[in-house]
Length: 159
Image (tube, rainbow, N blue to C red):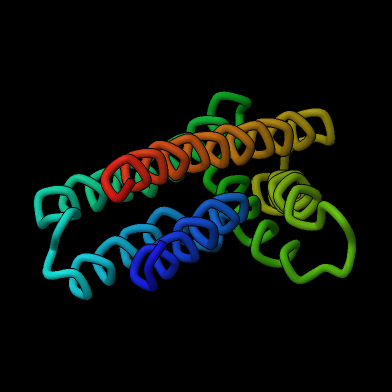
């Protein structure tokens, strides 16, 4: 394995790991690695068409994350406050010094926003929090699936 391939594998690994965290653009990291590999190798064997396809997959993952997270929240009765609260809670949860802070933050953000701002009851707030949490989990699986598909494609191209 040469240096170019090693660099690409590092970007692929970072992208897959990054896909586990909603705030990290995992699939975009893979695209940057493919672009760098292409630039270093004169775009052989990974060409511009391949990079455009990878960029399209990355965009689909990004759009899908927002759609799934919003859909999960809305499906369980969240108002716009619950969706906003879930987003804020997710970001705050990333910085909590506890395991699962992002998950807890997403749930609590939607739950508290529904109770405090949408003036809903505890049961409705809990449903909104559950929907936000399920949307988050579904969006993580989507991005992780796309990241693995991108990794598989790139490995096939350079092997």
